[in-house]
Image 1 (cartoon, protein in one colour):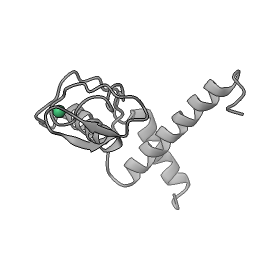
Image 2: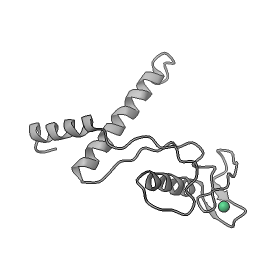
Image 3: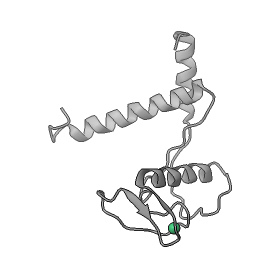
Length: 122
Ligand SMILES: [Zn+2]
């Protein structure tokens, strides 16, 4: 169905929305938090010094002039973690240009509480 260009965007949007709701549900269930961050430039930015290091999608290794050399996805994961920590108020050495979105929505927490009452096995 995703290959149908008329429906693909709606299906993908619904899937991401459902995925996020599940993450938020389980975060409440296991007493932790979900922090959504803007993923823009997280694979290009050096997680060590903050420099933007342009690379194509086929380049799998992040190599920065500061000496940082990481697998591309590990570098991106560190940047995402730094953004999440920064949005929660944790101190970090290279917090620049934060663009974060949201924490748990109250409505969703209420929904999770209601689901727990209705379905204690969840
Ligand atoms: Zn660097």
